[in-house]
Length: 106
Image (tube, rainbow, N blue to C red; front, side):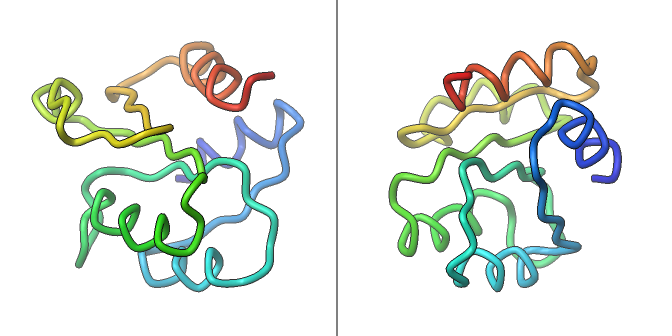
């Protein structure tokens, strides 16, 4: 998580960091502007996709990028909804940056 925040900050993006799904949901329930949610698929408690479903009830158009170490999760087409993408770990910084730019249209 800290590496992702560091990379995004170095790329010029403003970041908000959450230690778990409940912290992330508290942020998404606020009026804070959020353009992209980056989440691991495997989270303690609820998984990243379950969290995304809750977030999408509040912010239906929010773009979501999942990171996973499980190739089979990345290949599961029914896992992703609209404006969702997945990147498989380990990923290099440039691939991550390119995926973020692609999702944000920048």
